[in-house]
Structures are given as C-alpha cells and as structure tokens.
Image (tube, rainbow, N blue to C red; front, side, top):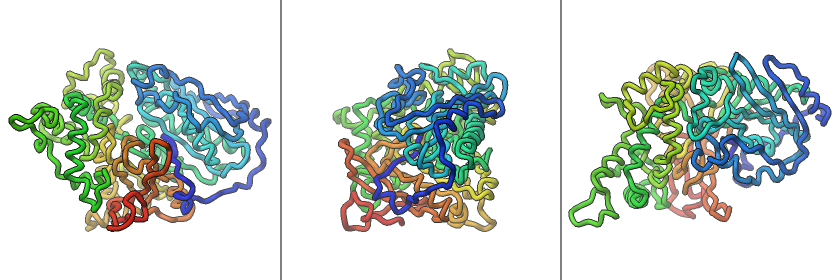
Length: 529
C-alpha cells in the first residue's frame, strides 16, 4: 500500500535527487491553506513539527488482527516511520462531489526539501481509513503525498457494511475517491508551493493496485507513472474466488501445510537451476495433489486424505461456473506456505461483504450457500460497471506518455498472481499489431507497461522470497529519464532486520536464472533469461 524501500546501495543506480526551484514554504502558508476554496471541499491545515507523529487510531483498530483486509495492522502497531519525520504541513480535507458522498483525505507537504513531485497512494481491502504509513513513506522520500479513506469509515466485523443501502459510497470506493483526491491534492500542492508538481506518481498494492489500474484506465492524465502491486481488480470475481479459496482451504488442516509445501518444493524448487527454497517458475511446476494421497498403512499426518486432495485441487483450479468456465484463476504452485491466510476469517468476511452489502442488501447472506452462476452474475449486473475495473483499454494513458509497473508476489494467497499474468497477456493482445505472436505483442506493450513477478513473496510483501522491491526508483527513472526497467532490485530481510538475500526481479516473461556459480542469495549470481 505504500512505496517499498530498499537499502541505498541497492537503489543507488536508479535513484536521482531532485531539487525543485520553488519559493520557500512557511507555517503561515500552511495555515492559509484552510482558506483555500476548492469545489465541494473543506480543508484544515496545520504544521506538524516532527520528528514524532502519532497517527489517529483508525476505525476498528481493536479488531485489526481479525480484520486485516479492512484495517491494516501496520496502521495500529507502533511504526518507526513515525519516529523520525521532518516538519511538514498536514492538510486534512473532505470532498462532497454528490449528495451522500463524504471523501476524507490528507495531504502531507514537506516544509523543506520538496522534490517537486506529487505521490498519490492506495489502500487495502475496503480500508475506510487514512493509511498513515503511506503518507510517512512519501514524506520521507520528499514527496508531497496524499491518501484517502475511499469515501467511508471502516466497519467491522463486516468490512463492507458501510455500503449497505449507500450506492454513492460504492462509486466512491470503485473509482471516484482516488480521482477526486488526486485533483484536490494537486491543487493544494500548487497553492502551497506556488508551482504545480513536475511529476505525479501513484503507488498502490492490493486494493491500491486495483485503484492504480482504475486511475490508468478512467483518468489517464492524473498520473505520469503508476505502480500497481497485486491488483485486486475485477473485484466481484476476486471476492467470489476468495470465498471459493476460503471454503477449500478450511478443509486442509494447518498441520498439513508444511507437508504440501515441502512436496511442492521437492518437485519444483530446482527447476530454475538452484535449490533456494523458492518456486521461481510456478507455471512450469508439475506437482499434482494426488501425488500426496494417503496410501494403505501410511501415517495420515504425512499425506492427504481424499477430501484434502480435492480441496487442494480446487485451490489450484480456481473458482468455476457450473459449465466449467473460469470465474477467476486458481492459485499457482508455490503459494502453499501461506495457505492459512487463504482460509482466514478476515478473507471470508471481505469476500462475502461484497455480496451481502452491495449486491443483495442483505446482511444475513451466507457465503456457505454461494451459487457462483447466480451470485457472480447478479453482482456483475448490479455493481460490475463500478467494481470490476481492470480494463486493458489504456490507450489514452499510453498516448499521454504514462508508464505502468505491475508487480505481484508468486506466493500471494489472497489475490492470484495468475490473474495478473492473464491481465498482462490481455493488455499485450490489446496493443498487438496484426500478425504479432505473443512475444511480439509483449515486446510492443513493454514500451509503457511492464510486469514483475517475485518468487516466494506473499501478499504485497512478506514471505521467504525477495519481498522488498525498488519499484518507485525504477518508475522515476523510466518516466524522467526514459530508462525502462529490465529488472527491479529486490531484497529480503532476516528476522533481525539484516539483508540476507538480494535478487533481480526480471521484466516478464523473463525470470532470474542462477548463473551456476556464486552465492545463491546474491543478485550478482543471477541473470534475466
């Protein structure tokens, strides 16, 4: 949900320092922003002196552990990001574009050292709260940075209850809140510094990745460059698939997760030329659940019972309509260590809330009785035009010179990486010329959109793989210097916070291959092939 940070030595080749020639901003300038007149908007502004900032307690914080998709735990737990902030002008605003719409947002403006650029940031799940970690990260990178609550206050334990009988809030969540925030925030930036931002970037993961693609499609002039991580696009189908995955994952005991994960690694880990505990090519992994089926006399703790085999097959196959056609892709091999996340109650709550609160206006709707033909099609008909964004029609964004970095962890248990891969294939076909094969189409679309797939990485980070990607420096270099990223540096940290693995994350369809010599945890030992 925010820009990912890498050690200076990793990102140095991509980072460029900017100093924007603008007039000095003062505390008086900050206070004056409260009087700024913007359509349908009220503002309040005050200087935060730093270095410490205490974020307000987000709605539902007491239930954050059980409702992670609705309220990020990173917003609740103490975070070192808030311990060493420079002085900044904190602007709090509310936008009312239509009756019943109340979009809250914040803009953080560096008092000194502004890099001349604006950064919009995304959310997770049906967040319903300002993401202060995203604001703090952007501020430390010298950006004027904005975030929005997407037009509603978080509700728990039902993360979509805010939408019940409020269709205007669904539109805010679907696309209006981010766009309105971008417009108003950039107006605030210009009023404060006396200059428009030289560049504007959007950084988002999960729901933020969906918001990123929505911005590129619906509002191609809002941002010069966009980072869409693990995009939760095609929300209706995604949430139906999460219910499918939840029901299947609940049939697999936690004690069997390591059995499955170890079997997948034994089968597919070394296919990329090195045994490093990662499945680097999940689409080339030929592990089948029935290979773990219990045999006569075998200890059932070391194998899968018939119902468990079926559940794992369902997870790999993905949600289906009755005729066998795909509702949403299944999960790739290599996600198994995070299987418990797919079976969490928070995932079930998020997925079912779309149907109960937005489609049927019925808080008693039961996910255990879901009928994919009936319910998915009803949802597509009622809210699909608002919530299923993820269009490949990015012609206007490309024509405007926009650049898009898509990225996804191969071991994401919440949003299938295969859906993002399929989106990129569709994007390439959309921009293909007559006679282009897949390789030619991918090469053509790569002039403005590139996909990066990180092995062993969970949802928006975490996992045993190189899970901190230098996406923002790569995007800046692409937009501002025309240097398209062939790979993105990535690192993994030990529990003690030390970098213990580095790896290039290669632009799709290439992937990092071990050179046959050198440290298997060092990026220098890998090449994109």
